[in-house]
Image 1 (cartoon, rainbow over the protein chains, first blue to last red):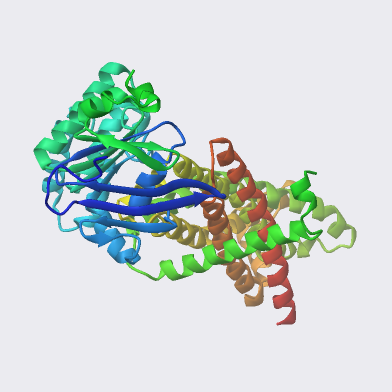
Image 2: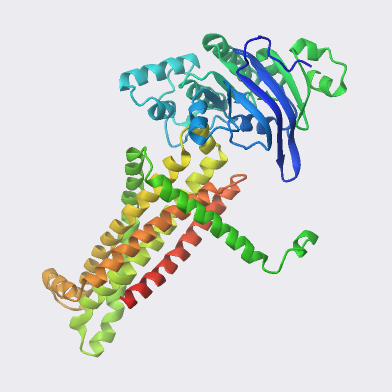
Length: 250
Length: 260
């Protein structure tokens, strides 16, 4: 099984022996995973397999019970809150529904992280950055809209735009295509690829959508009952004789 | 009762209550710690002051107006029976400022503000907006809780002062239904009965009421887990708990004032 990234340089993410238990039930069971620079790794698994817990542990929204998660050389399990926040600035997290702040319009949603982390930025520079990011996600006219006025696909694009405002080195996508039609899913997948190519961002994509995995993955890791059971490229896994793996690809 | 429940000790409800009390205490101490820690979110604080203060003005004004009016109309016949009608302005003024104004205004605010905060933060929790803030390295407690609690702490006393003024004015109108008195004379009679010991505890308890309204709303909102149904439950629990706590605080402050 290929647990290592394609490149040989120090990986951006190295997870070792990650365990997590909820109410006596083991959700993650000894997960080992590496993500290289500008690599897209897709974690594929059915609902309840521990995918979301894995991604939440990576930003410490959920505290792991055991194991280490090294991101850009820092073990996020051991660092203090200040160091964790310094690292979180370099990590983008796209939530399943976009998680836009519904009391703010799109412009303010995008400006929000910058107002906190780039206080020296002038209004003109801020507006220029917002316009650039909106352009990148294909919604240049959306600035004045409220989140309630956006469709599911637009919310995800704006959510992605918001995470890109701080120019992250690592992106974590939680079910980026869930609840979207095929055409919009394709657009989101294309955006993920564009971001990888344009900004050299490493990405971890959590999904159960095989079309998303096929389009975006450099490498696919398959999670079952909290443990990694297979890893490889799309073509390698597609040829597998394992019934459970085949159930995804057929 | 399930088998698992029956194995629990008889004092289980008390255990749950003390667990809540412990969690709430930790939440409150965290507020105290974070409130003095920079950065200070001045803009959000002012926005919240506007939401808490300005948007409650109408409701507080109507309630206070009715309060003063009813109090005067209902007390007047009794006092007139003793020939003590001239004491009415002073009596209304003291009772409104010492007790009725702060408590009624705080209960109204608990219904309007605490529930709003509980529902707002609760829905932010279930839609992962609070998590989104956390992962963008912005302290949601500092940004959401501290600003809201400070806003209610500052604005509720101001609303109480406003409500007191409206009540006394409506009392003047009610007094004039059967009598004839100028506003200057009415206020002279009303304020002559007032002492610092009437005003000071009232302001102090209004500050405590404001803090309680804010912190309970935030606590209930932050504890929301699960789906949207729990948002409604949180808003409801915020109103009930805040109203109850207001009466407890009132009881304690009255006891302390009595000793002084």
